[in-house]
Picture 1 (tube, rainbow, N blue to C red):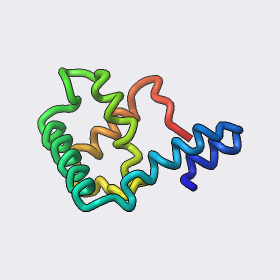
Picture 2: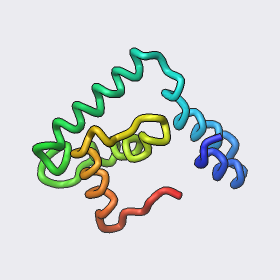
Picture 3: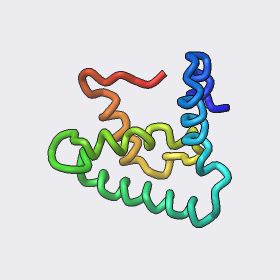
Picture 4: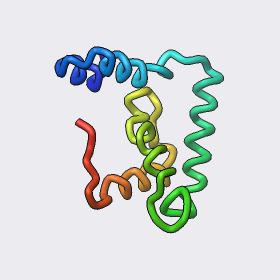
Length: 104
């Protein structure tokens, strides 16, 4: 079971443990088409962030918060971000925001 799932399970949140496990493993054994689409999504994100610090406008927005949720743990699902340097820089920017609280 994925680390988040084990943490949730220890807290007695079995539904949360199952949900965390499913999120982390959804694409690990996915079809080539799903993996291709995930790569296209990361490339699209990287292209947008190559010319902008944030997805919408000149400051962090709901778009950044929503996309950060899964993107910052993409490697845990078997999706590396090494080929997407703008996404990696964006993750660092988000994690440096005031009042940012990391998971775990």
